[in-house]
Amino acid sequence: MTNKGTTAILAEWAAGFRLEDAPDAVVERMKALVLDLFRVVAVGARLPWSRSARRLALDLGGRGNSSILLSGERLDPARAAFVNGAYAHACDLDDTHVGSMHHAGASILPAVLAIAEREDSTGRALLEAAIIGYEASLRIGLATQPSLFQRGFMATSTVGALGAALAVGKLLRFNAEDMAGALGAAGAYAGGLAQFYHSGGYTKRLNGARAAESGVMAALLTQAGIWGPRDILEGEAGFFRGFSEKSDPSKVTDDLGRAFRLMEVSTKIHAGAGRLQASVDAGLALGNAHGLTPAQIVDVEVGIPKVIQGRLTQLQPPDLQSAQLSVPFSLAMALAMGRTRGPQAAIRREDYEVALQSEAIRTLSGRVRCVLDSQVEAGTNTEEVPSRVSIRLADGREFTEHVAHPRGSPHRRMTWEELSALFRDTVADALPAERLDAVLDGVAGLDGDTRPKALIARFVTAPGWVDSASATGADWLGDCCAIPRS
Image (cartoon, rainbow, N blue to C red; front, side, top):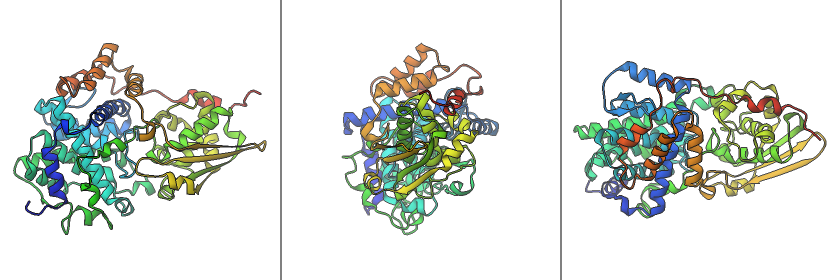
């Protein structure tokens, strides 16, 4: 490590980082992101693909001392991280960073929780590791995007694996040399292609799972003496050149330790892609303000930035995953739901499943025109994508709604109280009230006396809950096609 390349600088910072080096706001934000992970895990755990991932991991066998969240079943830390990562990214509700196109929570935190439980780490150690994992993966993502995505790679399963390896290395008390070796080992695992955007498949749901599992394996291999190239980022056949036509290593190292990219992470209200959140907010507001039904709307124009053109603009998505990645379909849902659910509603996975069976929603989705908008383009940055939605009704009336900052974005951040309320609402049928309070207090106290092992033990549901059916979203469908009262 005599040459201070990007890998070495990042590894040295990670090895030396202490929680007191981070501003209080960063520590509090990290705790909020941990709480949000528990929320989205509770949503994702009961989905069919999550159940399949859990059954497979259990069928593969092996004993361990890392828990599958909610069920309390134990596996080795790599497989536990895999299952919990599958839960976290199961329905596209997990936190996201627009600029790096990366879901850090689903890839970093399952790895951190699995090792922190095994090692009986302190809460402060967990927060240190989590901050390192977020920062490293977000910065590597920023350094390689948009080329990484344009070449067909997914950020979560690539940069997420690298960040998770550093985070686990921190919990295992690696020095700088071993941190670099763990990054190198993670390079052997980084992968994941975006072909599902074109032809479907379930593997997108596992991007966080594979990254978390890979990070654990890379760090444990390094601990066992099997480390990777210590110049994995900048090397002539390293990550930057392998995954990106044009990279900017300075985005990894500039202001490292002084500015924290995790403050740019959004938590999601709606179970869909991060770049469509503002359009959904706009649709809900319009639908509620004017009491709209799909039949009333004859034309919809949504202003978009170029970055989502062709990727998130499918008019007639064939399945749930495609619908969650479609601005037109998600907007059509929001316009229909706003009348009964209100402008502050949260669109859930179940709502998408119901809407996919609705001819009225599909017809309205086909009327949505996505047009490049200079103002939306100018407002798009590494933190958020704004939206403009204009509609024309059958009676000739026209309305427009602008959303500069989607709910949950850095400029419209959910407070601890709001995230706590979301958590309570999500997990109310899984945990008794006193257990809910204990989990909330435990996350809030991670920088105090909370030990992750005890926190995870509190986040366990009654037997059978994970395997039971989740709620349906049919409560709004009948009203969406009704004739509004005068």
